[in-house]
Image (cartoon, rainbow, N blue to C red; front, side, top):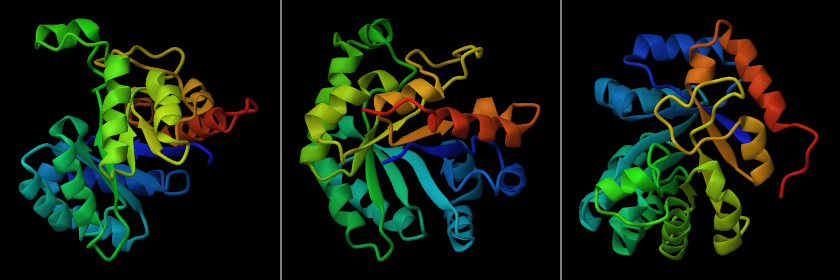
Length: 235
């Protein structure tokens, strides 16, 4: 499977989202809608995008009791998202509830479990009482997610190979924390370039600021696609 680009619509409102969708229409088929935009515009935006043939990765990171998460998946999944996120740390029963709910939706919906946020490193985890290596913990959470029915996980580029080894090459790995070679990491701790993430075996990379804040977003998207389709073989 080749690496695909997901453009992060991390913008405050529908007007700006629609401008970027139209601008990048010839380059991007997958779009991520996160909390900021979803809370402002609601499920209607997802439905409109799906009706227009856009593939929506709904990144809400649900984390609650199994019953609540299952019912929430039914509510937001039925509007046309192709993938949506829950937190792997919610546990096996919660993941299973989400996976079972997704099977009840007419349009295929993949459940993606978030492992360890790319904004966290070992020091940041220690501050909240988690004395774990973030990479090893991400792999353990991925294994639980796979065993509980999730279709894939969100993890940093550093964990891709270990997750594929533990969960199988058909298990989806989506990697945020993507930065261009000359870009600052911003609020991300565990990052990689598009080329490196692709070589490590990412199925999808999520890119926001390097495209959105570029002088020419279309050219930036094209350059990233060239980088992930480079001559070096994956896996």
